[in-house]
Amino acid sequence: MGLVREQVEVPAHPKVVESAPGRPPEPRSQPAMPQPSPRPGQVSASYLAPEGPVARPPAEVVRAAPDLAALERCIQGCLACPLGPGRFRFVFGEGDAEARLMFIGEGPGKDEDQQGRPFVGKAGELLDKMIGAIGFQRNQVYIANLVKCRPPDNRTPTPSESQACLGYLKRQIELIDPAVIVTLGATPLRELLGVSTGITKVRGAWQRLELHRSIPVMPTFHPAYVLRQYTNEVRGAVWADLKAARAWMDEHP
Ligand code: SF4
Image 1: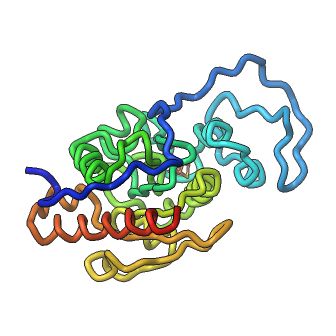
Image 2: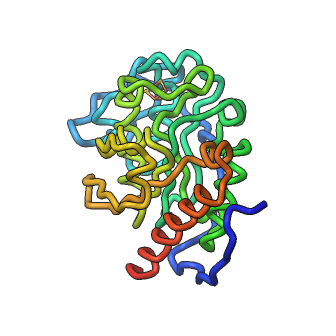
Image 3: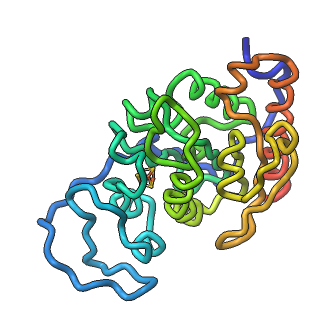
């Protein structure tokens, strides 16, 4: 059974461009050399990501990462919270680096940890259907998680784990600069926007993320929750939220 009971004709957005869904880390062609420290707020052109795990990359380097590839190189060895040592693969996120629509989930699950990609299990299949229902393909949007490493047993990341990772997500959002963000489930909404109202109450109600600019945020249910509560009511609610996000994008080209 599909996610939605109706389908609407929605035009492909002119800004959408096709891109490869994944961006594996680029190989470094030069050996790591001692480098002078970049000035605050700047990345030295010669900055090289560390070869191995690091407790935490310098905050000023994260904030000044010039593009997603540089950001990923900078943080992929992070061990700044207890989730780092337990991961099999770091899950940075994937999609169109210039996407107007960005989805933010909670954290990698088992399948994501194995493949190093976000939303690739059953919940990922449903998210693909959700994306398709509003006229996009997966590689035309951007998909990321609040935390980049898998919490054990797929538990919810703790507030301290979430906050340890939040600067990476914020820089990711700034670089993508989406027109609209759809948050999936309660956790990213709470940690990113400070909204702790239950997702059942707050879903469908527009929020604002004040970052490099004010970005509209539509909260909806996490696809894993939809799979567990596969009712007309829950599916209808998600469909309404996605339609609202798409409508906002169409009204603000
Ligand atoms: S979850 Fe985030 S902060 Fe924690 S180790 Fe992984 S990348 Fe670092």
